[in-house]
Image 1 (cartoon, rainbow, N blue to C red):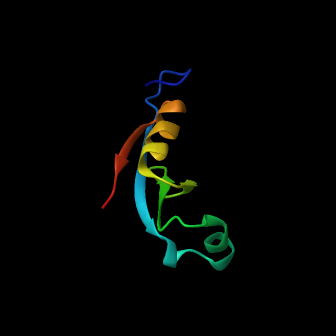
Image 2: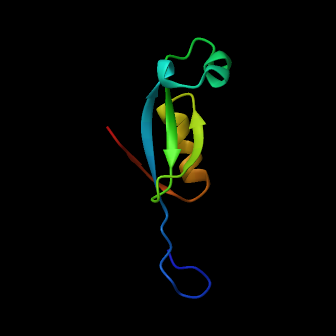
Length: 72
């Protein structure tokens, strides 16, 4: 997709599985019974969101007109 100046925009986000045990303590406590979360990153590696399941991560990315790709 091109922006208003005709420059091709980077509209890909990467979905990365995150184990609950790897989270900082303050976030760990907020996750309840969820054992695996998904981190959403832009192409520069910046974390944009942390969500509870893969389907939710895909839905969120598409809602904001991004193309989601999973990382393993």
